[in-house]
Image 1 (cartoon, rainbow, N blue to C red):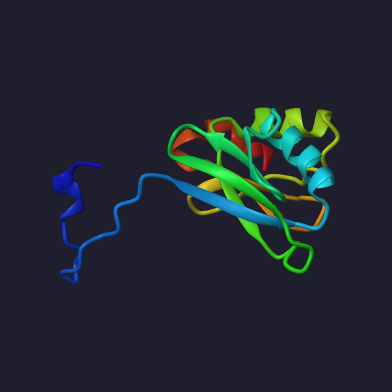
Image 2 (spheres, rainbow, N blue to C red):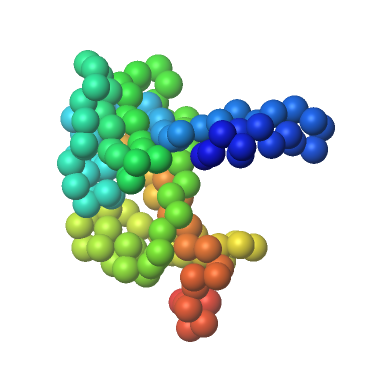
Length: 139
């Protein structure tokens, strides 16, 4: 973001918050079990362990996912991941043993919902502009 972009006011005249990155965060009751599940989901192990009880997967330089061990809060989160090829991801995850439900067509995307070992919801979404014409028939 350039210096000029930081000073662009919103509709109500206030300045926006300049972000350089954003991380989604979910809580886990058993970090080892959840780490194995997310390793399958992302197709690779965590990129960082910045502190005890915290794992991170980095997705480019501006986005990531944090998995934090906190049993009291585990299972109540939701994270949506925008993907390019939902059918390929569904097939890969099912072949790796994750429980993958049927895809659904939403207003702006085709989605599939998964649950991690604690019951946190993970939604994979392929925006409508990327959905092939024949994919709607598979929903």
